[in-house]
Image (cartoon, rainbow, N blue to C red):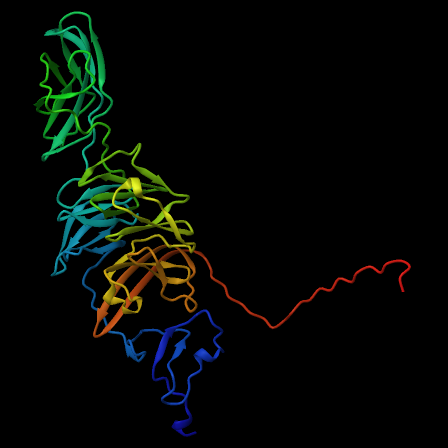
Amino acid sequence: MSTDTLPVLQAALGINNVDDPKAASFQVGPRGGKPKFLTQAQNVDLDKEGFVRRRVGRTKRLDLTSAHSLWASASGRLFLVDSGTLYEIAGDFTQREVDTGLGDQQVSFTEAAGQIFYSNETKSGVVDSFWGIPMPSSPFIIPTTGNLQVGRYMVAVTAVRAGVESGARQPAVIELDSPAGLAITLAGVDGDVDSLNIYLTQPNGELLYFLREIPPSTSFTVNSLPPTTDPLKTFGFYPPLPAQHIALYRGRMLLAVGNALYWSQPLAYHHFRIQTDVQLFPDRITMLGALDRGLYVAAGSRTFHIAGDEPDAWQPRLVDTRQVAEGEPLRLPTQKLPSLQSQGEVLVWATADGFVAGLPDGSLQHLTDGRLAVDSYKQSSLVFREEEGIRQILLALQTKQADTRFGATDRVTCKVTRANEAVGEP
C-alpha cells in the first residue's frame, strides 16, 4: 500500500471523550485535511496549532513521603506540605521547615500585606509570624482594699502580641457597696503574648476605657479609674477559625469553614466577628476564589458569584449548577487564555464537564464543554504550565466518587395503547 493512502495525523484539536469514537470528528482525513479530535493522548503535548510534540522530561529534585498542597505565591515563593509539615522550597530546592501538625488535609494559601497566610481544617498561621491572638478568659473579680467609688463596674482584658491586640470576651461585672479595689483573676494567659490591656468602666458606666498595660499575669489589682479617652474597640473579635479555604477580597480575609463564609474586619486580618459576619451556603464550600471585582464560591453542585465592596451589599448569585471538585482555583491573566476575550484576571477550576473560567464580570465560560467529561472526584489540583510556546492547565484528581458513563443505542421501544370501542357505535 502506498504511504500516500495512509491516514496521517498532522494536527489535532485536543481530547474529546464525549462523542462516539466512530464519529466524523475523530476520522483522520488525507494529508492537509482539517485537524481532528483525539480519544486519548499519552506523553505528548499539543501546541496551539494542534501539532503533536513529545512531552519534555523531568528531573526529580526532592524525596517526599506524602506531599500535597504545592503552592507558589505571586512574589515567587514556593511552599508544600509533606507528612504534616509545611516547608518553603528555595530556588536550589533546599527545604525550610515553617510549621508542623497540619496533617493530611489540603492547605489553602493566600498572600496579603507581604505575608503568606495558610489554613486547613486543622490549623491556621502566617509564615514567619502569627495569625490571630486567642482571647484571654473573662476575668473573675472580688472586692479588695482600695478607694474606687461606690457603684457598678465592668472589667475586660485583651492580650497584645507584636503590637496586635486580641479581642475581648464578655466583661465581668461587680457592684461595690462601699469604697474598695478590685482583685482580678484570669483562668490562664497564652504564653506567646507580650502584655495584657486592662479596660474598666466609670462607676455605673456603659463604656469600657483603657486603664493600663501590664505584663502577662493571671492576677492583678485595680484601684484607680481610667481616663475616658480610649475606649475598647475589639470587643467580640475572635482569631481566625481553621478553614478549608481562604482568600483575600477587598481588604478582608475570607474563611470557608464547612458551609459558612466568614470575613475579617477591613485590613484587620486577625479580627473576626464570627457571630455576625458570616454568610451560610447550602452545602460545604468546595471552592473559594477572589478577583478584584468579585468572588466565586462553589458549594456542592452550585457555584455563586458575589460582587460589591462591602459585605452589606454581598448577594450570592447562582451562576452554575455543575459539581466542583474541592480545591484551589487558578488565578490567571486573561492574556494566557486569549479565547476568553476579556480583560484583567480570571479564575479557572474543574467540574464534571472539564474546565470552567470565571470572568471578572461574574459570567462563566466552560472551556471544554461538549467534548470533555470527568469522573466525579472529591479533590482537585490545578497548575498552569507555559513552556516552549505551549500553554497548558494541568489537572490532578484524587478520591474518585462516581463514574461518568455515556451510552447510545439504535433500539427504539414504542408502547401503543388501544382505546376501548364505544358500545353501539359502528
